Image 1 (tube, helix red, strand yellow):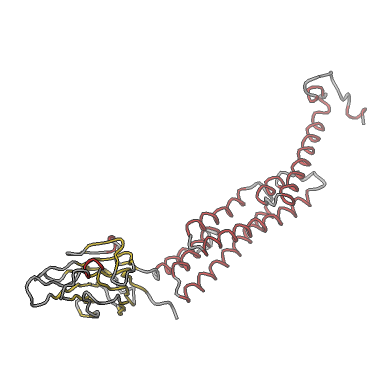
Image 2: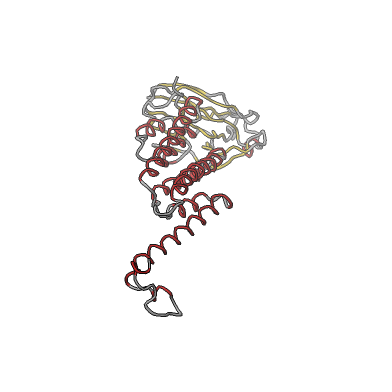
Length: 328
């Protein structure tokens, strides 16, 4: 081999042996260096795979194993194994966030699956990863449908968004828009109110049952005042409206003699009249149909007693929300 390759060392060097490799052997020296680096990457990948269980890091090292390396086929196999384990670990973490109701963090976690496709791996493995991602995305779509039928629309939308996060090219966007139609329409949010008169928004109010109720629309009455209302555009997209109607604790302490109630009008037609609330009334859940209603008006009506300076109590409705019925 010495005759075929020529002189191994052209001169001595104390700093770097590569400087001493003759021109005849530069290619072979380069190939040897690549092979050594490939072996190092294989060993590093094996360490992160088997010892650290860091599958993402292991894939990075295995992907750098040279196809001239005798361990190349083993590295390809382990990339495949690590890919499955890595995606499974991501899905497990995402599912834990979903269980906690933290959909935003779940979606952020699922974005990590896309990073697999950015790694320098073979076309065959890229196809495998695409296939795996498509399979996992379909799993999330199946879960979304189950949640939709169960009436948990927030979870349903979250799982469609998860499928899109994993596989943006899966054609799920139209399904997402369809599922979003089932999300609750929160009537207590200012951005969802077309117009309002004489009503006040309150974060939390106490009722006479000593419970605090959140996201309240508050109605304070005074003698001879006119009814106050809020108007919403539903667009015929919802079927029911519900909330909790109650007398505020601070108002009840005054022992006013009057009472108050709610009227709901759909496209100008009276749909519902709530139970009346006086200073001794316990909170009640209210619910009424709005199927096909385009414009909804919620009107608060107060009735004072005939006695002078006696007023109706301050009342509120908590978590007033419109809902669309789940598909049959």
